[in-house]
Amino acid sequence: MIIPALLLILLAVLILPFTIKKVEEELEIFLLLAGLLAVTVTSQWAVHLIKEALMEPVKITIAVFTAGFLFRELKGYIEHSVDRVAEFLGISWFAFFIVFFLGLISSAITAIIAALVLVEVVTHLKMGRKYETRLVILACFSIGLGAALTPIGEPLSTIAIGKLRGSTYNAGFFFIFNQLWYYIIPGMLLLGIFAFFFTGKKPEKQPGLSEKSKETLRTILLRTGKVYLFVAALVLLGTGFKPLIDTYISRIPPEGLYWINLLSAILDNATLTAAEIAPSMSLYQIKAAILGLLIAGGMLIPGNIPNIIAANKLGIKSKEWAYFGLPVGAVLMGLFFVLMLLLK
Image 1 (cartoon, rainbow, N blue to C red):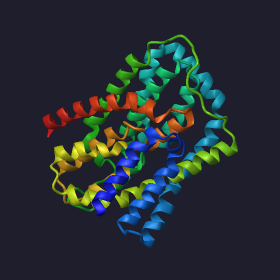
Image 2: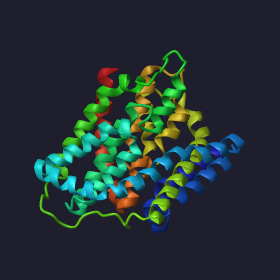
Image 3: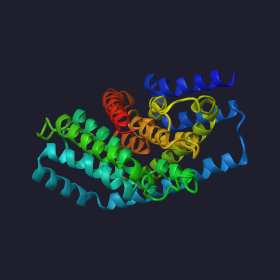
Image 4: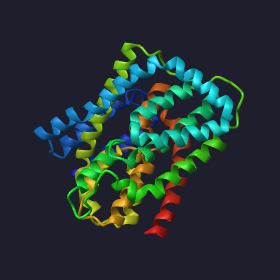
């Protein structure tokens, strides 16, 4: 009965945020409850899991808390710089630059800080809600890809390198960069091109996305708390769904593993990495799994930390994100799959 129960929980995680407004508004608490239920159903409660759920979010929430104060102080400078650069480049080239550049530097400044920079930039653009939402989604796809190039960019790469260090792969700091740069960098360029065409059609100023509240100590603490709950929930969900993954994962070929990781759209890709990646896998399996996780992570809000930060601060709804994020993700999944077959 465990697998059917996990499938029901999985369906709830996928469907309820899109159909029940209260669930969407309290997504972090909902995911935490789903994680608690999944771990309980699979009887996986242990001291080490409780410690992991409590401690894993700490570094990320410290970064979010610190960056919140930093960007509040730099708000005026960022606003002035955005206006100047956008006027100099033109809105289409500015959109391209933001998407590609934030993806590129996210591997150094972390995906969380890159997402906060994105929020500040978009707040001052005034391109219209439709076009700014597209820009945010494309940039979050790019940040999710680029941050994986180094282990300091996002948890996915940290976990993957940690699990492969000391194995036959002897994975070091640049392992993922060496294996996947020729997918990831062209992918960020393609996303920048999408931004050039899909977000640059309305150069005139008009009301757009804005932060739902001013940056005060209360809002910074509230966002920090939500990120903490979100990451803790993902730790529990990853552990809770592990029996479901373990039952089938070893039988899935690389191509199938790539597509099964569409789960990353609703489950954090770092926890799926922890459940899937192992030294016993072939290099082709590892690359296919990570690529699928990275791309699908941008398709829906719960898939990546940058998504949840940007959507929460800018008030982007789950349906808005899915309306544009799912088609973009489908195109990227198809293109990367063909490229993966050609280069294997």
